[in-house]
Image (cartoon, rainbow, N blue to C red; front, side, top):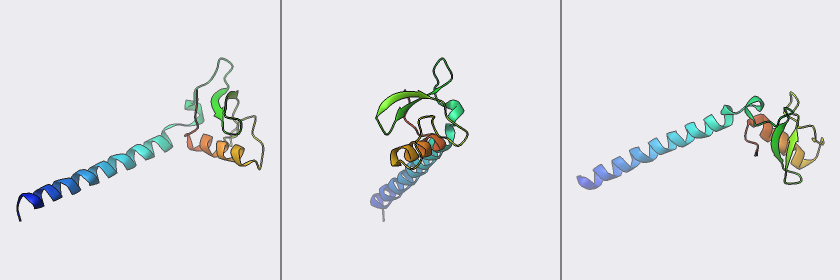
Length: 92
């Protein structure tokens, strides 16, 4: 037992602390942004990047997190609405 054990213990402690910080940052990112915090244009529309057409859009978002351009059943649109609800939508 000696320096090797001390180094291993310090490394484990550092990795645990880094893991906790990462988990906290993930949680903060997921819960930190609501639709009210998403950037908006001068008309109050949310400035999002459309997953379906991969383009910048300004769209109103309803109370269920669906942009006005949302098409029910389309996988990209469904994923976009989920991202809006989780607050992790790409914006501009």
